Length: 65
Image (tube, rainbow, N blue to C red; front, side, top):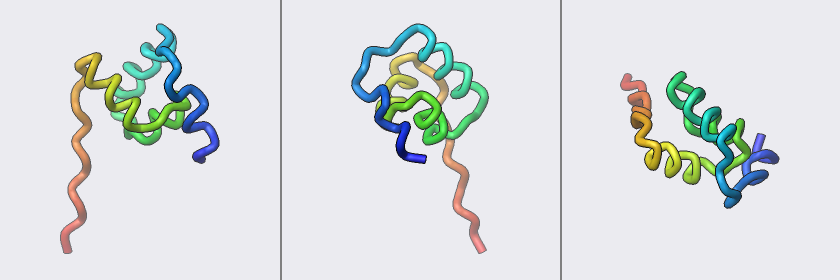
């Protein structure tokens, strides 16, 4: 699953990529999966989401037994 992660790393964001980021992010897709779909590292995707002022993803709390 990691072969696609750096495909677009460091490249300028295209309008299409930003639209896909918005779609996936607002659809509640996990940041790691968004990163994989866009071929970018997760920190880069999170940074772009923050730049676009998309809502923060809340990590699911750990299962407490």
